[in-house]
Length: 422
Image (cartoon, rainbow, N blue to C red; front, top):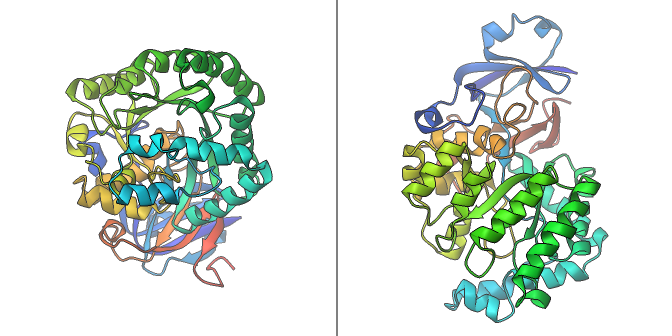
């Protein structure tokens, strides 16, 4: 099928170098006013000014789609989320409002381990059904690719169950799910006093089993005091690399614990959170080419200090944005809200925030060559925003501007009963 999308007030292509965008590059959105996009067989065949694209071979035989003077951009690529869980953590929420800290909530039986108990009890079918429902909400808000972590199982069978849930849900929804193994998320209650034994299980039992079934593309670790040390994180990432899994790291979130250093040492695709990162951490990440994934919705929900995003960008480290969707610290699936937080709280310019939520998010998942921008040969993952200027995507908050969403050249969500493709 061939579509020619015309009458877009602005097309944000994010055309640029074949790598994550850093520094001043994050201000460049590849803007075409009165732009057009030719889609053929699920991929971008042409993009540019309308008059130019309409002269492209095959454009005369394409079905015309009127963008109605709206804004066309790539679908959001959300590169950090924990969407497989059984129930929200409402008790944690109430305790936090009452002044309890992250550590106090965990000591009282809440936190990650409360989600672990519930995931272990849930059936695979129950978790699939819940994940598919969440996927629909992501799509409605313009996200077309989502990273999905395990980490609420913390034993072999439960971690495998979570990743099988991701695989099954990806067959039932249009949202593209990128699976990450996060067995090193916390110490399970049964091994709380034996961290070395649990790290050994992650490295010698879980990672080989995950790799054998082809259930994950990445291995992640929560490098944090009281969770996994820099040394333990290195062991997990090395075991993952040996099994063909690329590295991601939860780094410098609650304290400065060495996560950024271990991410750089192991050439991690991304180091995420970075709330406590210092200058030498950023230099290490810049030298390794690691993307800094910031998750301001978690800072908002936990009422904690935001990362020093301007310093990170100015240091030359490419920045991505993600929701960190999870039941404990970031129950947010709308990347448009994250754009607003990035601009108002992290002081990113709208252009930087949009680059971070699209092409840099794609690079944070190792997908930058095929996702995240509107360039010839890439997947036709697009969102049409009901706006006249791209800055409105970050200016308005608390709602949803997505008019329709396309995944691989097919409309997967529309606010109209009759889409322009019918």
